[in-house]
Image: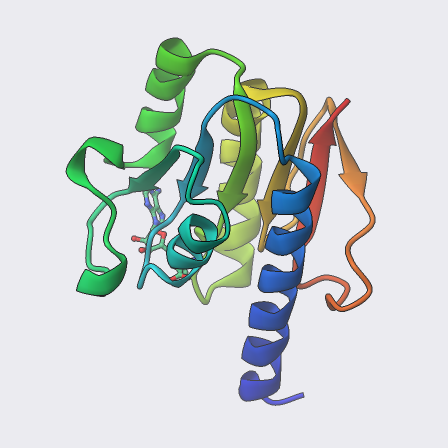
Length: 162
Ligand code: SAM
């Protein structure tokens, strides 16, 4: 499988899992957290699909396309290892949807990073809230969900606080 194939599979899976999570959390209160702005493509998708919901974006350095850059007051700047614990104090366990796309090209580093941030993300979700991630996460109390048929196994993951 070429890198192009892997990339396309990731994008198709990301959109399918996000669309599923958006529909499944419709009507829940609480904020949405986008972890890793990057170019801003998934942020743009989230805000287009759910303009009525508050989306906070966590990013260490904003370098997104100007057309998909969040407002300053909705941007939580800094390393998520520091900003997630701060956000837990501010918001409590209220998030309806958390999307994380923080990984880079080094798969071993991605696994270690996912292990580091899983316990920081886990307490932020409200009951019924969903977490969508491009990397497998390591949660104690969130349950892994089946991904939609149109997503490719191993390219995106969905977890739920029951
Ligand atoms: N989903 C985005 C999109 O559709 O354009 C792409 C996200 S990109 C793959 C990953 C982003 O996560 C980068 O912008 C990077 O700066 C950010 N990031 C990685 N590690 C981070 C950390 N520890 N704290 C905050 N942001 C981080």
